Length: 591
Image (cartoon, rainbow, N blue to C red; front, side):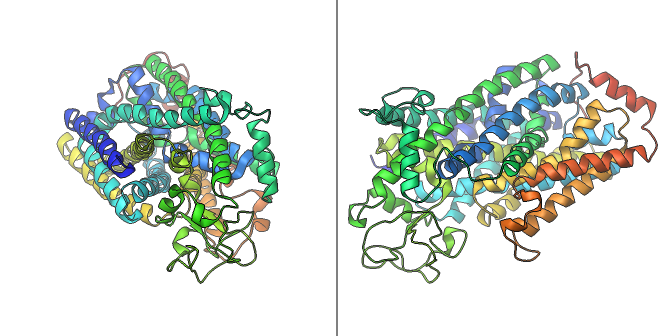
C-alpha cells in the first residue's frame, strides 16, 4: 500500500481512539471539566503530562531546529528539559497543596485581588494563544503532506478533532486521550529513529548511534557532519554561532517559561494528593527523556541523509520524497545557474521568510519559476525546518507504514498540547472571569456551558493563528515561553517563597514584564515598529531569549513596588507559610 492509504488507516484509527475516549470520559461537572475530578492515577497523569508537554515543537520542530542550527539548537533541548525539572521541583507540589483549578485562581487568591486575577487571565490568554498557534501550524504541516491537502484545510481538520474531544470531555477526556497520544507519539518517534540508527551506524539505540562511527567506516557520525557542513559553507555542526549571552538568555527564558506554563501546571491539580503530584512529575520526566535524548540523534541522521541524497545531484535523479514535499511548498529548489543540479550552501533562496513566497510553474529542469529569487547567495535549496522529522523516514527510504506512523505521531503531539491549551483558555474565561468575578452565583451547569462555549471560540481563534502563523513551530512556541517567563514565573515563585510579596508588587511586575516582552516581539520579531536587524537587539539578546530579560524586569519592579507599599494581610502570609510544606492537601477546588 502507498503512504497515503497507510496514513488514512493509521491516522483514522488513532482519531477514532481519541474520539472514543472522549465519549467514554465525557465531563459531567465543572470539576470533571477542569481537573478530571482530581482522581487521575500518577502513572496516567505522568503520561498525560508528557504528551501535554511534548508538543508539535518537541516532536516536529525541535529536531529540525537542531538539524539546521547544530550546536546552537541545543538551547531548546536544554531550556525545555531544565524547565520541566524546575517545574517539578519548585512549583508543582506547592501549587497542588494550594488546591486551585488554575494559575489565575492561585494568583487571585494568593494576592487577595481580583485585579491580580484579571491580569493573570490576560497573561494566560496571551501565552496560550501564542503557543496554540504553533500546534495548529504543526497539524497543518502534517496534513498538507500526508493527506495531500492545503495547510489551511489541514488546520481546519485538526480544529474539528480538537473541538470534539476538548469541548466534550474537558480535562477528563483530554487526560485519557493524552495517555493514548503519548503512546502513539513516542512509538512514532522511536521506530524510525531506531531503523535509521541501525542503517547508518549499526546501533539499535539512537542515543548510542549519535556518538558512534558510520557503518563500515572509522568516521564518526558527527565528524562526517562537521565535514559536510563546512564543505557547503556552513559552520561546523558541533560549533555554535550564537553569542554566549544569547544562548544563556534563550535557555533561561525557556526554563522559566516552562515553569510558568499554565497548561502544564494544571496537570498537577488532577491527582488526588501532593505525593501523587511528585510521583507523576517523576514519571513524566522519564517519559519526556525518551524523546528528548533521541532528538539530537534524529537531527544528525536527517542532516546527513538530506545532504547525501540531494545535494549536488541532478534534479532528474532526485528521490521521489523530494518531489512529494515540493508539492506542499515547504521544500523547493530554484535553479539559479540553470545547470539542473541542486546546489546547497549557506544563504537565502528567496526574498521572504516563508515558503508561501514561492510561486509559479516549474521550468525546464523542474525548478520553480519565481519573481523574488535572492540572487545574493548561490543557495538553491529551501527546506522548511518543520519537515525534518516528518520527512526523515522518506529520506531514509523506510517502509510506508513507518512514514504514516510518523504522521500520526506528529498529529498526536500537536493535538494533545492544543487540547491542553484550549482548556486553559476556556477555564480562564469561565472560571476565573465569569464565575469568580462577573457571575459569582452561576450554577455548576451554567458554568460548564460557558466553559464549553469558551473552548469552542478558542478553537476558532487558534485555527486562524495556525493558518497565519508568525513563524515556524518552535520559534512561535519559544515566544510563548518568553511570555510565560516574563509574566507568570516571578508571580508564582514569589507567591510561594516570599511572604512579603503583595498584590501591588505582583500586579505591577506582571504588567511590566508582559508589556516588555510584547514590545520586544513587535519590534524585533515582527518589525511592526520599524525595520530592525540582529545588530539592534538589546544586550545582543534575540526575541526568543528576551523573556529572560523581561522576567528580571518583572522581579525588580515587583520587589520595588512591594517594599513601597503595605505588606499582605496576616492570613495571606499564613497561607504562604502553609503551602511551603506540601504535606497533604485537600482536593482541587476553587469555589
